Image (tube, rainbow, N blue to C red; front, side, top):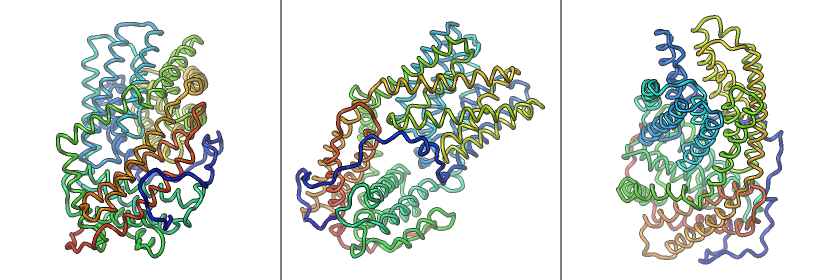
Length: 585
């Protein structure tokens, strides 16, 4: 950070170092490298097993395992929403269940009205594109659109009559309702669990930033700026989680105070700035993540003002006008100028090409190729290339696992159910290490689902799956390279303008001694949010091919100026708050 006084206006771009090359290389080793597992990997893994086991065993008891494909559509909804506070999770998972049922209904009606493979593939590709856009726009998060596409595409090629559809949808909605209960059940034990994890991540990221903030005027390729970006994103996510968590409780009050300390370490890292000690931040993070009481930190400068501002912001978000603003923001992400539209076109063309090519080659299950192609499309083409490698490797290894486990699954129907539940758990346990590792478990589970309708020749299943994987991956990535996303640079330019406006607003409140503390805190959080969006937009555009040149120098200047402004707000936040300590959990 710089000691230069903060002045309003667009930052100068002279004498700034050149950023690294915008387009990242396509490195297979990096795409396949294993990472540390997610700190919450076991939550979706256990949830999907519990949500699936009850419907599976019920159908086993009544001798109707052929209906598992419909209950599984609802059970898989338990995979969603695990990073959200329970108040928002309830709405999000309910929306997932309804969206799953809607996609399934379209597929079942189409399958009952026509047997034309060409029509079925077209509908499957269109559904995949719509599901991709809606999941990205609503930011429903992992596993995103792939589960929806898997269910709707498989249903398109299942024999169906119109009279059966209400009963099949009822099974999906019933299993979805049970999945909703499973997703919310932890709230009975630990009501603030998601908020605690979000705050712990913010404290950990702030500790890294405080321990290595980087020397002033550091080059963007060095770790200091990256630490600040990560800390900004984690603090912003923690505030969003707390804002969405519902009414304040004593535990949430303590969590809010912890985020104030994490924010102080992020906006003004380094010795002599009043930033918290990294070891103390890590200790708070460990206690916050644990099951004991939430630590109650000493009041940081401006704590009372900030918490008052958080309450005011929470009230605005819950008011009618706040909900309308959220709906308008969603519509803007779906509008004609949305950067999601090129990705939707990629999905539509890639899935259609994959399905038609497999059908032309006589593959009996072209929906596998549709799902393979749909799973490839990420935020940019570089990430899509990585996913192509991961999906191909994982599926090819997965068919070997399927060949090994198939004799065991055919011992009895109960053995088949247990194998599916095991692979469902393994997929969620492994996929956070790397997508290809999770695909090794997903592939045999998807193949075993076919066994519920009757035994199939193993050689036929394996051959079809290998061919669908290779063709789907090849045509899907071909579509990604042919459909360019020139809107990615436009998103960066809009994010730059938004960051400039947010920075100017924050500077005005810093320079105005009459500005209310709540206004200073609001503008600072708005600036942090704009910096997070700017970094996300820049990372997305840097992985796209064949587009306008990125304004790299302006990106670097805007980020540095934004961080300097955030640092300038730290000592101007008002006197230390002497609010009474709030009890822990």
